[in-house]
Image (tube, rainbow, N blue to C red; front, side, top):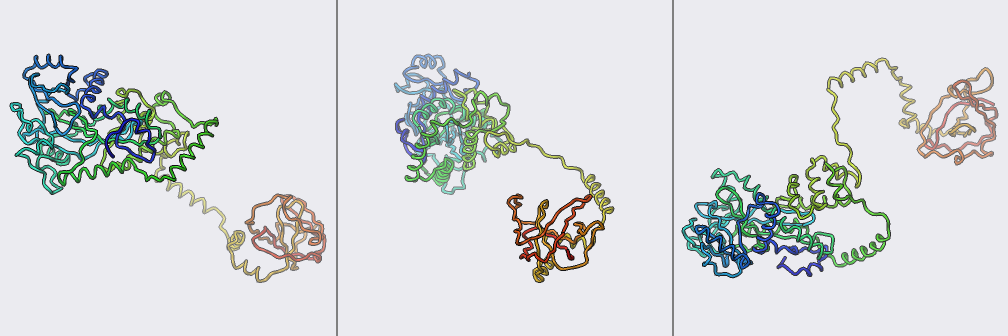
Length: 576
């Protein structure tokens, strides 16, 4: 935070640094440059849009025009100011050209019908912060100062205490009342806060909404008069991609008796000294919110050096690579009625703007907003980032969330809400379901027990099998997909009248789920000849599968049983 530096000094800034000036911002800070830029915009767009500054003449270039003007309007009052000065130094109110003593100065028409407070003239000191040029972002601080002259306003006297509202001038007056030490006293003395001014206007029945809307319009159009020049200098001298510059402007605004604001001057470095507790409270919170909003990142020299080496190495690879990030041209963007998708560059600009807005503190963002597309004709050239922000902010809040949540380069899902069915239909549907369940066959106790066994819920059965540990045998058939576990305990079998065969659907079976992943037929374990020395065959009779066991089971060796490893069937056997 310091004085303005030369343009070459901006080349040394890196992305971890922040500087409180933009190159070329003197186009607003000097009174003669401000008048030239505003007069240029007035010629380009007409006096209808740029009628918020008084007519002015710059000496010595406009000496003849000024003489002619003052000779034809002898009753008018004019105010003479130095081209670059502050604190009210060198300012004088004149009626004749012979009273103009300065060779280099700016002479403006005097606004003879100002709005007054207790019959005294006042003006406003507004704090405006510009955090970026491309895209343009402008914030206005909620608090400010209202400076009141010490003498009652009249056009018959040429006293400095009547016509000038500068604090540095009026504090020398005998009638000056210093603001009290109480920070809650907002509208006492000859220096008020904007909160105290709003309270006073409310008591007087003044509608201040159109006044503040006109003030916002004045600030935006004033900055747009130098936006093109500052943008060119930023691209010329600042090489890092991040926004490393911001600027605090002090706008001096005068309001006439009709409630129309006029710009008097713009200060590049407004005074931050505090002469009262109210001053200290306002200016301390102002600087704190500025640093919070611009997002100062701690600087680490080693980390910055490593990132710089990484960028240089990546630059070599990206130069030869053919893959480029998806980009959209300005012409394509302007043809869209509404945004359909966001590229990676769009998301970066929008997220940076939104994060800065979340850190704004007591600042109010006046550009960009949902309605700032009306200022597009006043830009020197329409820029892509400004256009993408205008279109994004004009969308609804739900649409904005959908665009940000969608993946880069893809359109968001269609936003719709399904209509809920009436409760009457839901009750009818529920009643029909109840009626249908009445005709279903109810499950018996045995069916529920078998279902629990198949799901592995019955722990008592598993404990019983582990405690009993019967001899198990494994039989694998060529066409079967599972390994079967067989209990060798003899019992009464059921035979087919054709041959000594067991029907699978007659066997008492218990299927246990296999937690292991299924393997292919070639990868499954095959029983070795020593383990199983019998011939098996599978035939199909109707819808049932028949397993032919034609050998003795005495030669089979028992295998250890694990209840979770394979699907198994338990059934009794008899003889050969």
